[in-house]
Image (tube, rainbow, N blue to C red):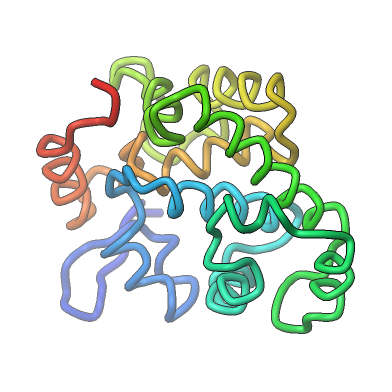
Length: 203
């Protein structure tokens, strides 16, 4: 089976983006492009945590609801959430109502505030774990990597939750720390060009 599939414009794309209509735009405009914004990085880590045991389609379809429920993923605001907010979120039918995952986002927001107080930014910390291309497997043949294991361990050591190596690997794929668009995908080159013109924070 080919690793690519023709998109509506006839150009090849990673096969997974044909699994749902909403995946195409996400694949073409977001997935694999480098991100330096702390809020977007925190959002993605949070959403990947919510995805654990579920499909990305479920989470992507609810993304705007998650943003509304979690203060736009401003971790400084979320860090102040109370037990009352947890109960409110458990009643919100627009998101995934899982107490452990909801509490993890609040905990992680507090940990993010601590991290930023000791670093220049969450982005500067995360991009420290960008792997060398030579250390990566062929695109989309792995679910973890040495870099995702290292970042996962570092976050867990600081008290973050729902940040296992597989969750972190998916985060790194999406946020451009790893270009996992398959060879032949029309977007792989665009993502690579974006990374070439990107200066990681703190470097």
